[in-house]
Amino acid sequence: MKRSQRGMAKVSVVWAICLFMAFAAAAVAYFLSNQEAASQRDLAAQYETKMKKAESERDTLNAYVLEVSKKAGFTDPTNPSRMDAKTLDEGLKYLKDNCKSIEASATTVQAAMKYVVEDLKKAEQRAQESTTRAEQLAGENNQIRGNVDSVRTELEKQLGDMRRQLSDEQQSFNDQKGELERQLAERTATWQQTDKTKNDLAKEVEDTKRKAALEADAWRTRMAEAERKLTPFTKEPEAADGRLLSISPELKLGWVDIGSKHRLARGMRFRVVDGQHGSKKMKGWCEVTAVQNEMAEVTFSEQVDPFDPPSVGDVVFNPLFDPKGERSAVLIGRFSGALTEEALKAMLKSMNISVTKSVERTTDFLIVGGEMYKDPENGQPLEAPLQPSDDVRYKNAQAEGVQIVTLKELRQYFASN
Image (tube, rainbow, N blue to C red; front, side, top):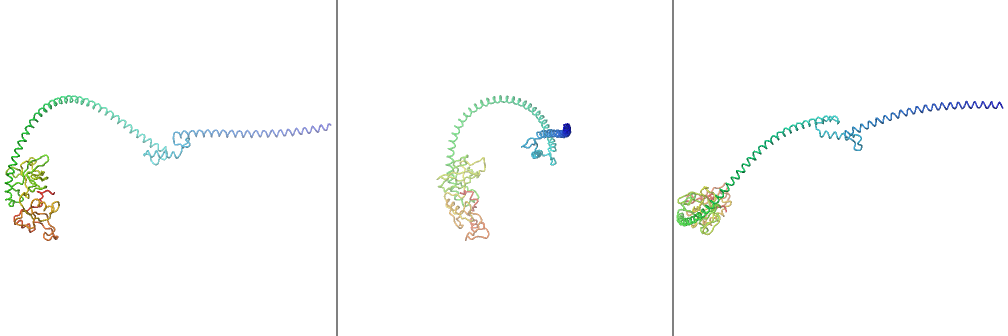
């Protein structure tokens, strides 16, 4: 029994030692484990501190970037919390486009700002100068306004005085006008009566003159027929072809005492000469515009003296006009334009002037046209133009004393129609 107890005691001691060793090992392991955990906790704490510091620095940087972005304004449209490089470049380009003084070397907003500031300073200086100038002009304007007000006051005073004077003058004028109108009415009545008496007397005088003129024209016509061939064409015939019966100075119209029964045709022109006995004073020209049996209407032109117009009783002349006799004419030269050879022959026929081919002693007129390009005998073209004065008939007419009338002279006495 004692050995068993001793054996059991030994076993208990061994187990106790084992337990102690195990406990010691566990204690050591626990100690070592706690020390490693503490080291890891310290390392984790350090990392956490650094993380918090980094997050704080990040938050501070983000806040700074956000503040700068807000002030700069060049932010990303999708993220307004940060600046955008493209937007910043576009803003810098816009700044350069609108501020021409920025040099090309300025590639940043900071570099461009100094040019903008300089321009702003210059603009402020110009604005200050403009403000100063505006103030000066405002002072001058106020001074001018004061002068204008003074002048206007003086002018209004003068205008009032003038209006009063005008009112007095108007009243005086109205009084004088009434008196003058009364006198005018009296004198108009007197003048109308006098004018009626004058017109009656003038009509009697004109009737007397017309009768005397008709008698004188009859004698002059007979004398003119006897002297017709002896009078050169360039001189005015002594006997008148007609006499003016009435005049309308305002319309430049009149009537002569010859008509269709005297072989007068529309378009004939006459020289108007003073009707006083023995006078050869020319007053102008008249052209027949309408023909009746015993008289014709004429229009006046080329008045010689504006203060001495044609008047009733003046006489008219046309060397080619003959109301009675039969005459003959020879045409040489070229006739063109409005007055062709056929038209000229028809006009001469209407005046009882026959056209012949050769010059005789009985030929009254040789009418000369322009230079000829064909032979007058055979009608063949000529190498050089032939002047009418070189024609044999022209020389014969000179030898026979026939009146030679140029186309220019003929047109003076007959209108182109």
